[in-house]
Amino acid sequence: MTTVRELDCACPQHCVWLYCVLQQWAGTTCSTRKQLSHTLPTQLRSRPVNTQGPARSPHTGGHPSDKALKSFPVRHLEDSRAVVRMGSNSSVHFCGIPKGKGPHAVGCTDLMSDHTIQGSFLRLFYPCVDSEEYADAVWIPRKEYYSGLADTLKLNRTLIDYIFSHYFGSVKCPAKLNAPFKPGERYPLLIFSHGLGAFRTLYSAVCIGLASQGFIVAAVEHRDESASATFYLRERSSTDACEEECDPLEEVWIYTKAPKPGSDEFPLRFEQVQKRADECIRALDLVLDINAGKPVTNALPSNFDWLLLKDSIDLQRVAAMGHSFGAATAIKALGRDSRFRCGVALDSWMFSLRDEIFTTIHQPVLFVNSEKFQWVENVMLMKKMDSTSVERKMITIKGSVHQSFPDFTFLTGYLIGKIFKLKGEIDPYVGMDIIINVTLAFLQRHLGLHKDFNQWDHLIDGEGEFVIPGTNLDLPPAQTENSK
Image 1 (cartoon, rainbow, N blue to C red):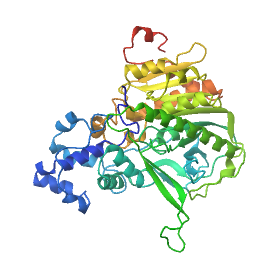
Image 2 (image 1 turned 60 degrees about the vertical axis):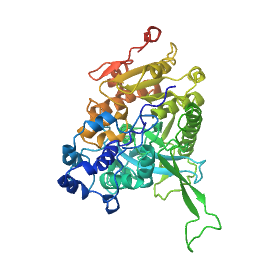
Image 3 (image 1 turned 180 degrees about the vertical axis):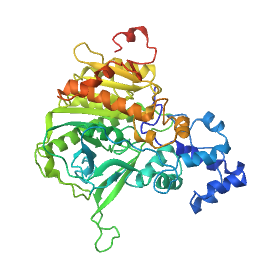
Image 4 (image 1 turned 45 degrees about the vertical axis):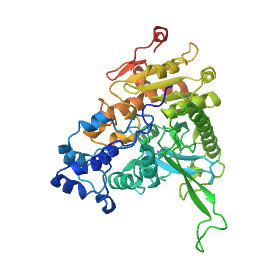
C-alpha cells in the first residue's frame, strides 16, 4: 500500500534535531552543555534523557533520518544553534518569507464565518491599500498551533512550544493584517488547500506572491483532522464554571488524526478528502456571497471592512490550488464544482483519490512537482488525467523537495535545511519564483486574463534552467507518451 512519504506541511524537522541533541546530553562535554543550557527553559534543563531517540512516524520511517543524526557530530552544536535562531531575540536573521513581486501591496485577514465546526475558516490574502499604519501579520498566530505541530511530529509539547516561541514567535509574513482592501477592479479568485499537518498560514509565500499580482486568495483551514491544529467555537454549557462576564463561546481545538498502526490508511484519507473538498466549495460560496454584498458574520475579532469587496471578484475567473494532500483536494473540488475553471496541483499526493474522479474532471490542470518527493505509482495516477480535449500539464522543478512549497524552507539555515529536506539543491527563493510564475502563466491561459503572465509560458512546457517537462522518473513505457 502506498502511503504519504513526508508530512505535507514541511513541519520544521530541525526542531526534531534539537530534540535529539537534548537526548544526547549525557554524551556532551561540560562546556557544550553550558553553551546549550542557557537556551532551555528551567523545567527542561534537569529532565532525564531518553536515549531511545524520537518516536518514529508510520509515514516517514522516523523524524529525522537515523543516518543523518548518527553522522552529525556534536561539535557542530554551537554553529547549528545559531543557524536556527529566529525572531527578535535572535543573533542570526534570514531573509524570511519573501514579499510579493507584483504591483499590489498585500493584506490579509482571518474569517471564521460561523463559530461552529460547520462554518468556513480561512485567511484571505488580497491586494490592499498601501499604508504603513498596518503591521505585518504574525506568521503562526496562536501557540496552540505549536502543540499541533508537536503532536504531528510525536514530540514533547513543552519542548516544541519553547523552541517555536523562541525562534519563530516573532516571525511575520509580509502581508498587512486587516489593511483596507484595494477596490477598483475585478480580481480573479483562488481557493487554496493546505497539506496534511499544516494550517492556513504555512503557505504565505505562495499566497502573497499571487495576491501581489492581482489575485484574491482564500487559504482554507481544514477541520477534517488533517490540519496539525485548528479550532471552532461552541456555546458554553450552563454548568461550566464561569466568571460574571465570561465569553458565552469557548474554543474547541482539533488536532491531527493519524491512522491506527497497521490499519488501512485509505478509508481515513478518502473520508478526509471529501470533507476537504466540501470546505473548499463552502469557502467559494462564502467569498462569492461577500462579493454580492451579503453581510458577513465573523466569529473572530476584526475591524476589516468586508463591504469593500462588493463586486470586486470576477465570477468567471475562479481556480482551485493546493499542495500535496491539498493538491488532491483541489482536484477533487474541480470534479465537484464547475465554477472552478482550472486547477494547480503542487507536488500532489494522489493517494486519496479513487479512479472514478479522473473521469469527472473536465477542467485544465497543471501539476508542479518536486524532484525528490514523487514516485512512479503517484505520478501514474496523475497521468490518468491526461486528455486530448483539455490541457493537462506536468513539470518538475530541478533540485526541489516536497518542502520547497511551504514557508519553512525560508526560515531555516542551509545546514539544517539540507539535513531534514526543508531545502533542496535549488535556492528556495528561485524555486518559489518558478512556482508562482508558472502558476500565473497557466492561470492567464485558462482564466482569460489580460496580463503579461504569458512571459512565463515556457515554464508550462518545462523549458528553462531549473525545470523539466513531465517527470524526472522513469515511467513504464505506456506512461511515457504524452508526458508533457
